[in-house]
Length: 335
Ligand code: ASP
Image (tube, rainbow, N blue to C red; front, side):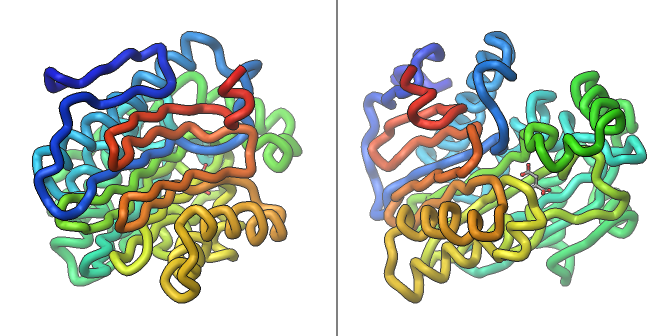
């Protein structure tokens, strides 16, 4: 942490002190750690503190990249990697289990300046799927690699294969057993998948980037692909409009092409990022009976983080340096 940053972990809203803008574009970052049924009754005080600390670490690390004139791609990757390395989130290390007891991960990254993108799905034994998505974008002539082909590419690119045990967490294993004991919970209890992670960033050059990484949904069928790695559904960035990363039940986000829909409303209809994101989450996604939320950021640094679930783990540092960390909805947060 750089000196001069005012940080109090127990507070929800903090302010970065001593900031000086040195270039044309404002800088901003928003991250999420998943949406779902999160109420104070389902998260212990210790878990809540650990989640807040990780969100703060991820958002401040990414913001420092931007402050040091780094690009939004590096900022997004740095935030997502921190969340992937934590057992508290459903991505990387803390990924949920498939019905067969495996960890199959999806991730995507998109650059709003060039519209370049990289995505991977159904990947095993890769600690940081977001880093693999970047390698697909930079070092292959493809956008999207899946399964064994993606893992082989990771090894070719020098990424280390980690053992299955790396991804074992007692909590996620128990969730799978609970689900097997009572499969109807899968539809009724979205907390079985909570924890997908994502980030959107705006750098001093005015470039937007979005990235998302997930273990998917607990008990998912072998080979199931969610919205997170699908460009335009769970992840999208375009300098002409917005950067978006989504979280929620992927099947609905795929059918609603949620991330691109928000971008289209901003680009073609001239809506603000907040109006566009709210319309898609509260009107269009709700009409499909889909649950979840998004983080969205425009090229002026405006941030919107709507969700239609009980909570969404989220954090941001806006263009004025204001830091926000929230887990529940605004009303529950204020209590
Ligand atoms: N959207 C993710 C998926 O369906 C899960 C989540 O965001 O919780 O794979």
